[in-house]
Every structure is written in C-alpha cells, then in structure tokens.
Amino acid sequence: MGFYLTVLGSGASMPTGHRSCSGQVVNVEGFKILIDAGEGVQNQIRRSHVKMQSIGTILISHLHGDHFFGLPGLISSMHLCGRTEPLDIYAPKGLDEVIDAIFRVSDTQLNFQLTIHTLAPETPQTIFENSKCRITSFPIYHSIETYGFVIAEQPKNSLSLKRDVCKKYTLANDDLLRVKQGADLTLPDGTVVPNSQLTQPPKPIRRYAYCCDTTYNENLIPAIKGVDLLCFDCTFDSKNTELALSKGHGTTVQAATLAKQAEVSQLLLTHFSARFKDITPLLDEAQAIFPNTIAATDLAVIDLQNLAQSND
Amino acid sequence: MGFYLTVLGSGASMPTGHRSCSGQVVNVEGFKILIDAGEGVQNQIRRSHVKMQSIGTILISHLHGDHFFGLPGLISSMHLCGRTEPLDIYAPKGLDEVIDAIFRVSDTQLNFQLTIHTLAPETPQTIFENSKCRITSFPIYHSIETYGFVIAEQPKNSLSLKRDVCKKYTLANDDLLRVKQGADLTLPDGTVVPNSQLTQPPKPIRRYAYCCDTTYNENLIPAIKGVDLLCFDCTFDSKNTELALSKGHGTTVQAATLAKQAEVSQLLLTHFSARFKDITPLLDEAQAIFPNTIAATDLAVIDLQNLAQSND
Image (cartoon, rainbow over all chains, first blue to last red; front, side, top):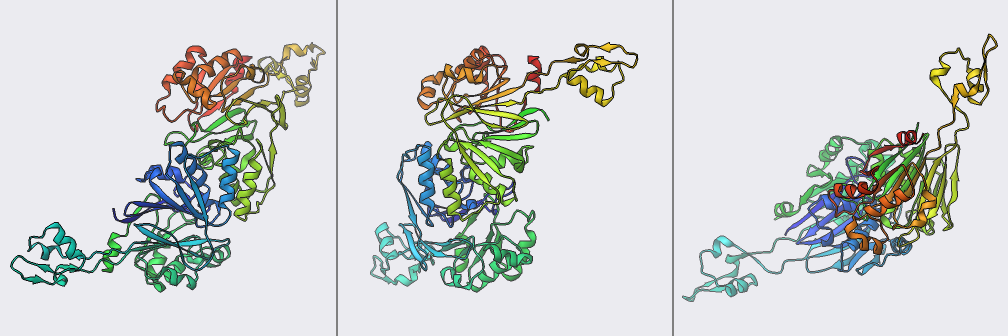
C-alpha cells in the first residue's frame, strides 16, 4: 500500500484553468488523510484515483477560503452518497461555527457522525494516531492562525528478513515469525544460525511534512527536521520576497533554504500564485539551493517509497 | 445587447464530470443577474463569456448546497480581483448568517459593500428594479423555503420605426425622435404623413421565469403565465414521479404540463439527476406534451430575442 500523496490542488487564492485551490490526499498504508479542501476539492477527488468515501480524516491548515471552501460540498456529497462511517476533522477555531451554520440553514441532518476538533496553538503535539500513522500539528507563520502537519508512519516492530540468506534454509511460518521477532534459528542438525545473519533492522519510518500557508521561519526546523518529504508554501519567486512576507507566504529561495537547514530528503513546492503561468523559473531558483526539489501539479502522485529507500 | 441567459450549471445535488451545480447568468440589455451559485460557479463563469466583475446582482433560490456553495468563493474572488462596486444578494433567511461567519473566521474585510436582502414568502413581489429590468420573487414548492424568480425587461416607451417606409423620406435625427414619440411627419411640401404609416407599436416586453427546485403545482401558473422562457426543475423522468414528489422536485411530464397550462413560449429543462447520462429520453417525454422544450447544458447560451419575435 505504501506511503504516497495525491496533489488535488496546487494553486493560491483562486482556482484557475491550470490549478485548483489547496488540497492533498496522503495515503499511509491505505489510510487516507485529506489535507485542506479548497473549492472544487470533490471534483478533484473524482478526477483522481482516490475514492471519496475512503477518506479517513481531514486536516484543515487554516480558514482562508482557498483552503476550506470545498469542505461543505465534500461533506454534503459524502452524505448524499450514503456515508455512514464517522468523520473527524481537525481545524483551527471557527470551522465548527461555519459548518454548523451551513447545515442548519439547509436543514440537513448528516447520515454520519461529523466531529470537528479544534487545533490548539501549542508546540508540536499529536492530534491523531492509529495503527498506520501518527499526525502532529504545530503553529506556522501566516496572516491568520495556521497549522503545519507532520504525518509519520508507525514504527515497524518486526525485523526485516534477508531473503537471500533465508532462502538457504527451509523455514516454516512459525520459524519465520520467531526470526522476525529476533530469535536465532536452530536447524534440524542442531546448528544455530544467529539472528543477525538472517535479518536486518526495520526500515526507518517515513515522515511527510505540510507547511502551507506560511512565511520562512527557522522556528519551523525542529518540527520538520529530517522528514522524507517537505511540502512548503511557494506562492512567490525571490523577486517578490517583500510581498511574500507582507502576505504571510513563502518564496522559492526561502522554501529551499529551509529544506536545506532542516535536512529533509525532498522538497515539494506548492501554492503557486496565478501570476506564474510557467513555474520552471521558480523550480530553477529552488533547485539552485536545494537540488532535490519538485513542483506540485494538480493530480500528481508522489511516492515516499523511493525517498525512504534512499535514506537506508 | 438583447436578453439572453448563460447556463453555468445544469446538474442536481452534486457536480459531475458533465454538469456543474445550479447557476445561470441572465443578461438584460447588458445588466447581468446571477441566479444560484453552486460549488465551482466561479470556474464556470471563467469558462463562459461572462466577466465575473460585471455581475450586477445575485439571486439565490434556496439554501441547499448545490445552489449556494459556490457563493463564498465567488465573493472572495471578486474581492481579491479588486471589486469596489457594491453587490446585492437576494436570498432566503439564513444566508447572511453563513456569509458573516465565513468571512469573520477568515478575518476578511471585503473591498466592496455586500448587502444580503432576505426574501419574504409572500405572493409575487418586486425585489429589484432598474432601467433595464424588474425582478419579482415568489414562493415555490421544495423541501425547504425556496423562491422562483421572474425577470422582465422594462417596457420600451418609444414606438418602433417601419424602416422600409421611413427610408422613402429624408428624416433628420430630430424628425426620427419626434416620430418615435408618436408625432406625424410633415414633409417640406407640407404633406403630412400620419405616424401610423411610419411606426409600429413597441415589441412586447420579454420575461424569463426560473423555478428550481420545485414540485409541480398549479399555484405557480399566475406568476409565470405567458413568459417567453420558463426554466423548470426536471430532476427526474416520469418513471420517478413519486420520488420527485418526496424530494420536492419536478419531472419531465410535470414541467411540460405546467409550461402548457401557463402558455409560455418555450420551456427549458434543468437540474438533471446524475443518474441520467443521456437526457434525450427526458427531452422526448417533455416534447411529447410541450414541443417547444429544450434541455439545459452547461455553458449553453439561450437568446430570448427570437422567442420574443415569435410572439409579435
């Protein structure tokens, strides 16, 4: 099942013919997390490989329209399509008031339990955890209360088999289980094969960090240190650094500099201003500082598998 | 400039790949009225010939999401694109509460004056009037408080010239003006040409009626009697008459029957359920009762000019 994300929208402020407003689905071993829900997010989900009803939880970074105006329509469509599974949304204070008002005036009683959790502006804290992943939120630096998120897969307790070595022996399933739990292997003739010859440590857990919308700030480094993929606000190029700061957004150079300082494996630029028809120059600016940088495009699927392997 | 409407969305409940949610722009001599604003309406406006900032006023029929979830995004984009002209919205009670909450939590102060007028459930009443048109609202029959609208062009006071006859004489501009106001024409040789030879009565005013979402109800007839174009709820075909009634929607047969009873010039079917991939059978059902029926498709432009001429 892996660990990958699907970009639903990579534009800023307003949808354009080329880019929808902010939205991503992160898939951790089959558990799907929607981050932000700009207007039209339900259409983008339909255009992607993601099944709308398979979304397990929703994170809203902040309450500017380009990050949540698609949420009422998505919730409404989940309801109309017969969802009964509860849905939890994590968002800054105020979303519950808006959603309550919208469904009250439309006289809609949802078929499923909708719970909106209010994020608290403390330093990184776990807001959600299940068998697949753990999600932490932390405050970032925009014009209104805004949060970043780190989604980490759960540690794999069992050791990973050295298949080429194990092939040499005839191993029953319970032998394999014991070996993966750290036991040595005793052969029928009494020979003992040390566990270290048969296994290798579990792969390091993979982590994805989402920081949008925000300005550059070194205080972000501890929360995103060493993640496999960092998605960062790149509304502007370096020529617009002052404008970016005044609007609480990031630039190419700032995103790349922070990625380098935080020693992440790869940087994903997103939230491009509609003024940039061709974002190649923006990508060039970032890659000059942090070569392992890619640019988000709507409906792109980005796999963290290879990134994690490159860390082994 | 004429009198025509641009269909932005012709689907029901949820956007699909083929049809957006409800939205239309009615253009009366250059004055543009947006009726309903389902999610994605700003995208549909961009795809059409309509300039977003040229919208003069907005009518919201009712507060189900597929008729207003696109309104916050549209208002937000008008603001971000620098609108300063005031905007008036006419909607059922409750929209003001939703819009206030949305822009309060996003800490947005609009650049323009936004006024939301609450529609009152009395019999037809004028809610808006300017030099181009007059708009009346009236209650229709859905599962929540819902309104229909009639948009009528203003009467043309001046007579219309018989150009073929007028060509025979040399007429100065002030002669033309006087003739259009009803005066006879006195030729240089003293001959008097009676006004009746030179002019014909003004064309009758054209009227457009919008009734969506609603069930069939004969009480609607007085409000829509004899309009040039009636847009009516056609969520279902005749096989689903009971389902339509239970959900407060109309069918092909009901729309066509009402169009015939109200003696309208043309019927426009809209709000098709996503279950109907091909709506040809629905159009056939309606045309069997009311031949001058057309089906709405997204981005279609429908001109009332010819319809009005056909009434002369």
